[in-house]
Structures are given as structure tokens and as C-alpha cells.
Length: 215
Ligand SMILES: [Zn+2]
Image (cartoon, rainbow, N blue to C red):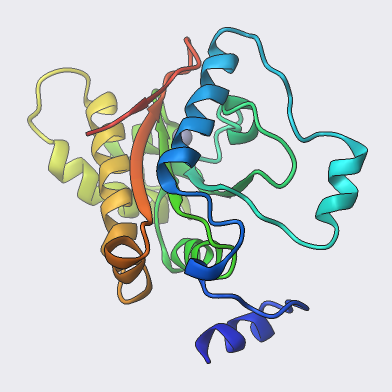
């Protein structure tokens, strides 16, 4: 019932199928392997630029079956499709400065999980994040304040840790965002506990291009 309502709200023309019955529900471990292989190609500068053909575009005109959700930062240096050497229709990408999680982000993740059958969600923070730096510097400027406030819990958590405060806060912020998604009631808690959905925090290294998964 809720799925049907969601599909109406989102203007879907196809009937909603529960995630567990969705034909495109690639298991989380397989999705992770695809992402990591793509990132290895990117790091080695041996990209294959898959799924970019005209045929692929036409194929996708009738529907999408992405295999992963990426919740990333708006930073121009971290475009998920390039970082994971993927193409059209492969990734469901949600980007906000500082990869913060709010209601709109959660709703977008739920849509991808429930209606598109996605089993893997990566929260992709990155080194030298401007939004995190603003939080570390206690910046208060117009609507940037909203972003800084959203990062505040990560700042508190990483306070007093040895090493670079921006790096520490980037790590804490990605972990917190992943936890927020994982513990979001009731859709994500059920998806994680019963439907094989995995939420993983990761950090992108600007210099090497490598995506490092966090524990
Ligand atoms: Zn950033």
C-alpha cells in the first residue's frame, strides 16, 4: 500500500515491486565488488567507461536498475560515476555538501531501496572536505550554517582525537551518516535486518583516487 502511494507520489508509471522480489536486487557483496573493481580501474587510470553507449541510454529510457546508492559530497572532485568507473543507470547518487543526511536524503535512499531494489548504500566522505572544514572552523555564514550544524555531532565525536581535526571529522561524519541511514525507522532498519541491505561508510582520497572502506 505504502509502495503504491510512493509510486504515485513519485510519478512512476510502472507497478512497484517489493525489494526482495525486484529482479535488479544485486546482492550487497556483489555490488561492493563491482564498485571496488571500478575504483581500482580509476586509481590505475585504466577506466573502461562502461554503460555509456547509445544502446544503454535507450535501454534505460523505460526504467532504471542501479546496483548501489552513493550518498556523497557535492564537491566537484568526487563524482561517484567517475570514481567508481561506472555508467548510465549504474549508481543512484545523492549529493549534498558534507554528505550530510537529512529527511530528503533518507527519503531518496528509501526510494532506491524499496522501489529499485538496491542492496548497497555507500556514504562517501572525502579528505579536505570544505563543509567539514567549515564545521571545524565554526563557520557561521548564511545557509552554510545549516550544513555546519548538521556536521556538529561528528565534530563533537572527533573532538580531542590525535591527528588532523579535519580528517578525523571527515571520518566521524561518514560513520555517523552511515549510522543515521542504518538506524532510520522503519524502512531502513527492516531493510538492513531482513532484506540484506548494507550501509557502508567510506572515504575518498583526493590524491590517489582510492576509496577506503571504514570499519
Ligand atoms: Zn566535501
